[in-house]
Structures are given as C-alpha cells and as structure tokens.
Length: 96
Image 1 (cartoon, rainbow, N blue to C red):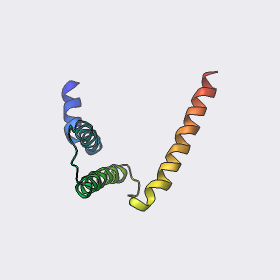
Image 2: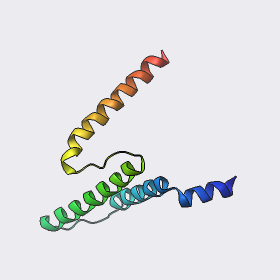
Image 3: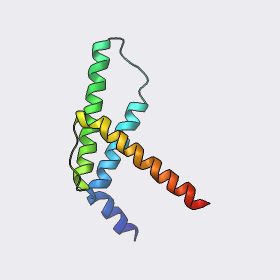
Image 4: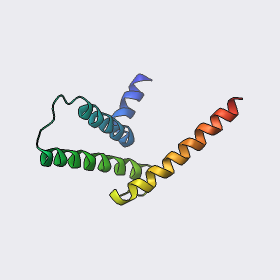
C-alpha cells in the first residue's frame, strides 16, 4: 500500500504542483531580509506573484479549468469568497 502511495506521489501532477506551491510559500515566508531598494522589492514581489500565478494556472488546467490572468484575480477572489461563505453557512446550519 505504501509503495502505491509513493508511486502516486511521484507521478501525480496535481500533487507535485501543490508541493511546489507550498514550497514557494514556505520560501517566501522564511525570508529573513528585505532589500531597501523599492524598485528591487517591487521586482521581487512581481516575480513571486508571477510564479504563484503560473502554478495556480497549472493547477487549474490540471483540474480542467481555464487559466486566469492578472485581470481576472479580483473577480475570481470575490467568487471564491462567496463560495467559501456559502459553504461555511451550510456547515453551520447543518450542524444545528
């Protein structure tokens, strides 16, 4: 059973993308220093945001969803928040 699990981990594209996404977030959170140059900070932030978006789009494509671009993010985030709130309300009312 464990061998099957290990094999699936190595070959599952979605799992690999989620690990990559987690690794990127972990690296960003563990930074101990920040440059004082605003232009360099902006460049680093833009690079990180592009990497996050690329991974998110790869995950979406793997799930059969269309990729998003920077212009779609605010609208998508609102719809995700609405979905999450609906789900929370459903869980709370179901527990009563």
